Amino acid sequence: MNARRDFFRRALAGGAAAAGAAAGTPALARGNAERSPDAVGLLFDATLCVGCKACVAACKEANDLPLDYNTPAHPLWDMPLDTTARTYNVIKAWREGSGTNKDQVVDGYAFVKSSCLHCIDPSCVSACPVSAMTKDPVTGIVKYDANACIGCRYCVAACPFGIPKYDYDSPTGVIAKCELCRHRMPEGKYAACAEVCPTGATLYGKVSSLKAEADRRLALQAGEATVWPRGNLDTADQPSWEGPAPQYIRHIYGEKEVGGTQMLKLSAVPFDKLGLRPLPERSFSSQSETLQHTLYGGLVLPLTVLGAMTWIARRNVKHDDTDDHSGPGTHAPQQEEGSRHD
Image 1 (cartoon, rainbow, N blue to C red):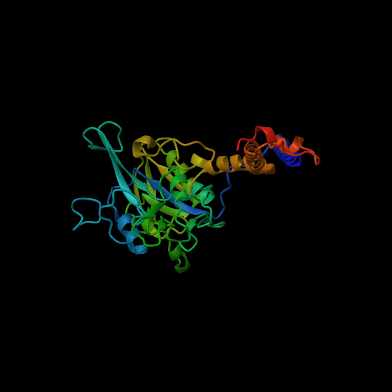
Image 2: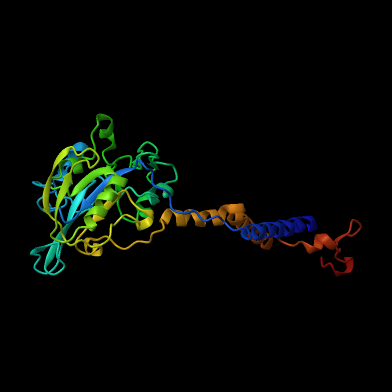
């Protein structure tokens, strides 16, 4: 029994010492991931969007998606209220007051596109335990593999933009979201939403080209005549048009938010009015992975748990002191013959 107690005592002390030593070793903090030089994405300019929803219909057709009924008029219309497992892209409207002035704060209205932003350092990829969510090292597109998915929905909870959606109607349980029409790329095509946009509110291209175009627009003076490209910015595959520049908010949403995204957005009204909340520049995945490395680096967490379990086990061990003090020549006391009552 003494040997057993000594074992528990040594294990507890050893686990605590190892955990303490590991805890004294600083974990290396991971910074934000770097964007691939060939990463592709979208530039959405809310000032050019007229709310026609041609992009929504084109996305449905390109991805072979069924109708998404969300209104009382569901027998007649496909009217998704948000992105779902059946709708990868939606146009939402913001309105204030009378809603008569386009892109104005007072009595104004504006449109915003909601779809996957293809984060440079995506939380969904970091959270996925089976690599069903992956990021293409060249294009940067965040891809989904239904065959690898186990339906845990960690990606749904991890995304700061609420984009991946779980299909509860699927018998196998799958996640769905925009993948920038990557299945069209081998055919020389690109994202259908940008291909059909009549005003160029949604542009496709390399993120570096889209960033340069966004910077150009922000440098314009309100009312200044300029050219608005359409379609694929890198190939100029569609005719552009001329028009006056709006008074932009001097910020590119997605340039730095959570480490940057491959979908950049411009607006003439504050982004928070469009449902685009302020986010830190450091990615959430870099923060969570740094924490994980701190806890598991040097086996800090496992050894701590082992030490705690050992302590609990030691408390529950019965101490049989009688056995310890009784030598080989001793016997249990016998009842005296005279005290026995027949």
